[in-house]
Structure formats: C-alpha cells, structure tokens
Amino acid sequence: MSTPVQQEEDAQLLVDTWIHRYRRGSLRFFILHLLLHKHTDLKAESQSFHGYKLAKAIQEETHGEWSPKTASIYPILKELVKEEVIEHTSERETVSDESSRSIKQYCLTPFGMVVAKKLEENRKNMAKHFISRHGDAPRPLPPMFRLPKKELLAILKESDVVHLEDFRQHLIKMQKHNHELLNIIDNLLKEKKTE
Image 1 (cartoon, rainbow, N blue to C red):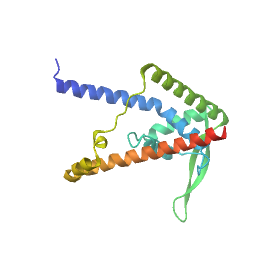
Image 2: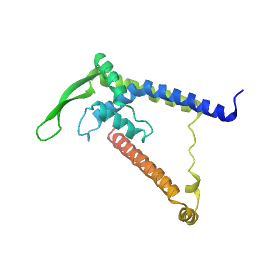
Image 3: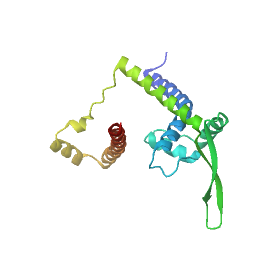
Image 4: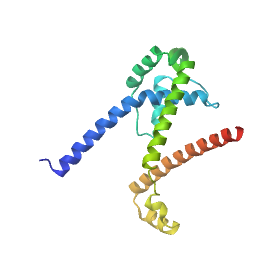
C-alpha cells in the first residue's frame, strides 16, 4: 500500500501525462483557431504564421502555461497542408545586411476557413451544453481583493520581496487577461451594433 505522499506524487505524474496528451491532441485545434482569428482580424499585420510564430502565439494565448515546441508544430502543419486545410507561401526574412532566408508562412485555404469555423462552432456548442448541464464554474475574487483597501495596503507593506513579486506577476497576468476580455467585448459590441 502506498503512502499519502506517494499517492500524491503518482497522481501528479498521471495528471501531467494526461495534460501532455491533451495538449498534443489539441495543438491542431489551437493552430486552426489562431489562423482563423488572425485571418479575420482586420488589424492583423499578416494573415499567416510560421511554426515559431505559432508556438509564441500559443504561449501568449495560454499566458505562458503552455509553450509547444516547433518540433511538435511542424508535423501538424504538414498534415494540414496535405489535407488542404492550410497552404504555405515562402517569405524572405532578412538575417543580416547581406543575406536573407526563405521561411514557410502558413495560412488557411478557403476550405480551411470552413473547417476552422465548423471546429470553433462545435467547440462552442460543447461548452454551451456542458455549462447548461453543470453550470459555469464560480470564480470568486481572491481573498486579497475582498479586503478593504486600507487592510490590503497594510498586508502588502508587511510582505517580503518574494511575495510582492509573486503578487505583482499575478496582477500583470490579470491585467493582460482583462485587456483581452475588453477587446473581445469591444469587438462583439461593434458586431452587434452593425447587425
């Protein structure tokens, strides 16, 4: 019989394995999601990605929780090209004053736009059905944010540098998340006003 500590370690190992498999399986969906939204974003400087740019975009989308390797991305890009969901173009990138290199940039094909939209529609429907059945997970404010400002300041003044840095990092992540949510809401308001 294993000890509680051993069970905790074994459980974490199993969960890590499942998360790794989930991420590998969902990488294709992330790529199509990014290409679809980059394609439909009118402010985008480019409608295509290369493998490294996709890896960085996924890292940003997940707030640093997931940094897929390009070695995992390129085989999926090859499959998507073979399935005619995406296509690639070559683009010259300046390496130095005298040299440049060709980089494959990937974008959705017209068929890929249909596939990506259907995939997104299915994902939203699954989430909607899950929430309607089980309810949305409540997200209470962290305890520190429920304190009166005076008490919060007193706690922060007594905190050491490590805790202040951790708290600062959490606030930065929340700020980025709030900024993204505001952009989404602004875009939705624009769409609804033009309907």
